[in-house]
Image (cartoon, rainbow, N blue to C red; front, side, top):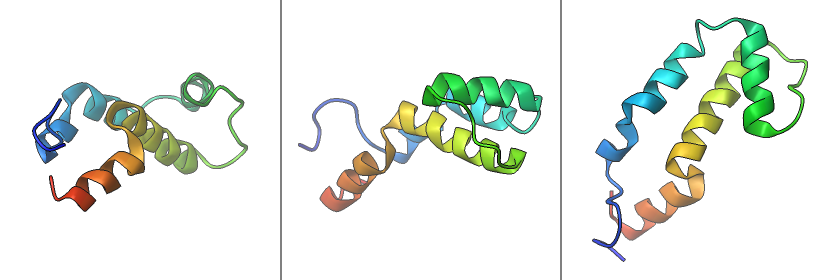
Length: 81
């Protein structure tokens, strides 16, 4: 229900630690990207390009921090955002 728990507003999605982790993906070495993949997905990274790894890791970091598409879809459907 609206007003219960933590507000789901655009400000909630600007957590500096999450933004810093996502921004850092562009500068860290590929072996470290693969290590993060193993940590976040509990499996070996696919043999795709670095750009693919960066984009999927960025999505996963945000998904774990903010709840993924189901939460966002629910918020937009209710009109809270």
